Image (cartoon, rainbow, N blue to C red; front, top):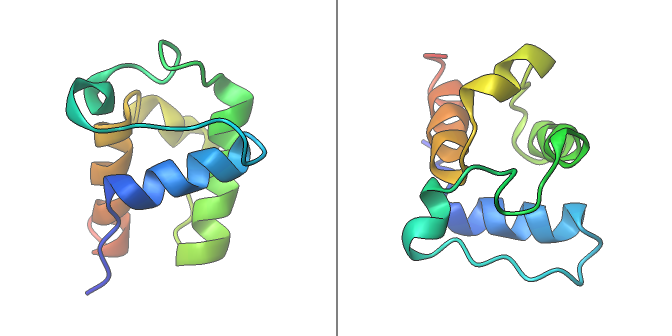
Length: 85
């Protein structure tokens, strides 16, 4: 079964930011709200689109509220990959 990791999320967030914005999700940053890390709702919509294109996981717009932090996003995406979300 495919798993989505924080490193995958960090790579996609860098792509969302145009490749020149480093993303470090080690330690407590993974539990910080995306807004505190500098990502707005437009960036999260871009992230959702990239996840769908690369992993085939559709993330409805209203589900973005269920993933307020990087760790929550990874858990949500993994649940979708497993077919339980």
